Image 1 (spheres, rainbow, N blue to C red):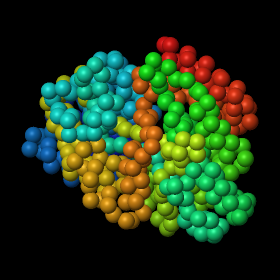
Image 2: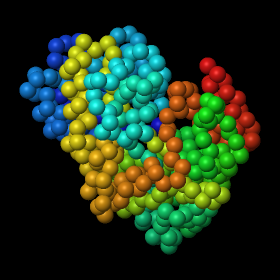
Image 3: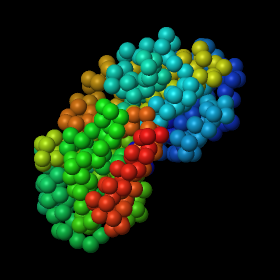
Length: 414
């Protein structure tokens, strides 16, 4: 799943210690753990060189970024074994579980969290204590290939469209252009489908701590899987793609739903692609659109031997200058309250408009946190399996939802 590609420092340069063995505990050497990959190597190297190192050189602090494959599992194992880096990404979906282990350092009295968006802070807090500082955030927006809509003589998607309008437009594009072209890309993942479910007013977790897959959930589920069953939406794997960005890059898929993290990918991998963005389509019954809010925090290892230095690195990573750089690089939206009105978001380029839509997605309609409270990644699995089973023709909508409810009840009783 490609949901958080833009949140992380993907890789840094050899000069910054990338790929070095973890040296947590060594005097004035601060290690940072996060995702591996190569998409944003140049951007991240510049970020650290320009906005982190200058703030630390006077203190003689060296920063080493240590990217890890399958980071979500790796960090759990590292924290348990006492080998985790000094700082690390704290993912929204895993936050409450990791905080509960006591392995994440409380930041109260060490860092001023009041300058950051409160709703994001809440994801990384527990029992009145702050354990992570949101580094940025994202929501979903609709990317569309302008050339395909132009060739099919179909009006571009717009922010007033309902699900029905969206289906009509992408269906017409596909049928007009013919074999080998597709209307949209729908992964069998809550990470995309959840935005459609939220538009109905469905709440992922109720006040009593349960998830109920009610009639509102079913209406979104039937629409989402129905487009695949009709042949007008494809799973990424059906077009040799790994995620929605690959689908749009192919030039054969008219629309996809991704966050700001797709912007740098398209800039680097499809520089000639003419694309536009629009807010997600509205549920025709509720008249509202939905969205998912994704975020990742910087957190400090409770076992670090370099707490004071780690706090200085955290402060540099979340500075105004660092967050402005991330925004202008097309990665994600800043978590600092003061930067929500940054002039960059008032521009008219395709990337700037996309980010305005991503920002609007957090407040327009029914936007919900992607994080499943305290239940961790196991919470998503029953829904993902249900989506896949219907898309692959293995189960009916009713049976798949019934089985997903059973799976969710089991997870939430642990």
